Image 1: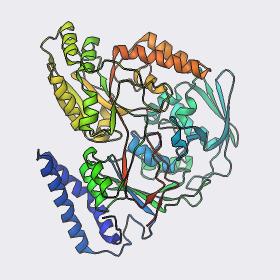
Image 2: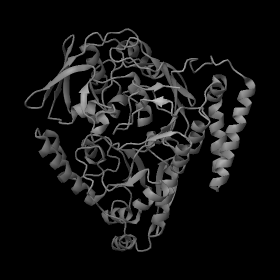
Image 3: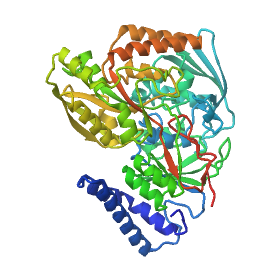
Image 4: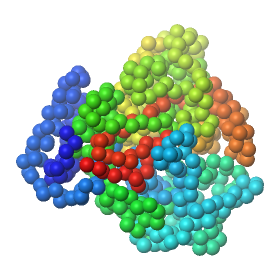
Length: 563
């Protein structure tokens, strides 16, 4: 099943994949029985394979190399724009971080996986110092680094990238980038290229989580100033230029994104010649693509396919990433503004049952807005455990003994979303038992990213997968000044505790402040945590060195294909 001799067949399949996905999804929507779904998917894929085999191919087809060191990864959804400052979602960031780097990164190696929270380590900055008052960060930058277009990386380039995000007076300031990374840069007062390889960041007030933020999804990943000046914002998103171990080759929207080895990389050279990221939104189709040899690795295999994949010789890896699948309650909604209603909803959802029965143990029940692999995460913290009778009582106390109708917005796929529609249907059924009738409103992932932060008043709640190795995650979702606080929650006491935590230089005291703020927020439940994902990946046995760290992304530098 894993033999890849017929590269022409494989690459013809890749070119035809968008049509296959549309047909498979159409068939699935029109059928209710799972057995019929699997049969229809299987027959559709087999038909395509037969047709593509008949077309032949010499193995040197657009989109794949003729060598063995090409890795094809089936990903959960289409990616966003390929601009590290503008893009949203982990699916996109996993691709972008192979091409772009920040000043600081995380240890995502096998050794690093032994740590519950990945260690920080140098990237484009060789070292850094923080002033005693916490207001000045001085970075000594790595010399001799070039962007993929030959532009030098230096302090001027670093300043260009920061000003694009934070300085409205800067010629290349981008409001979309500023909004996307506002929580990372909002406390910065200025930045300065001191000399060619010394770069300083100045803060209005201490921000203890700045380095951790730089190393992750919300970091300032460096793009080539030359490329942005020449291409503009939209053009750059079609031809990104970073400093990373891989560089951009091509994108066919809805079909593939191809990156290739950067032979001029300053650090350890990748073993792979190129990587193809192929969007396959349907989980069952992803598993079948792996089994049929059309891809080498898949993200988020269907929970009920994992045992079969393992029996057939595929390797399934999981980790303990900073992930929480949560509900965002709309506090502008007439029902959700009542804390007793939110508490009732939290107690009506059988999270343990969802994790074990629906998700087949690929997730654990979540009771915390903070996620695992986060220093402020407390695995023993429990809030509003499953108790449908108590939930009914709270609803009655809130003035709704007969329940009410509301709308639940959710995506059909996407970064960390697991199996969002079946999970939403589980919640819908649980809430119906206490009299809350939920209408599901579904969106494709990229469309969902454009609307989830602005719920209409008729929407009771929506959903998002999030999490961070930084306790700052709590601030992002619940602080009144955060741009990601989509619930409109405002608790001055919680805000004050989080502000104190960010200004605290003693790490133990800081963590205690985060925990106090979290406990206070969870009493109000503006967000309802549902499950923590173990984020399984499945791969062919010949894929070596693919490490899943305790993080939402990975490093492909050490991956090889060995047959």
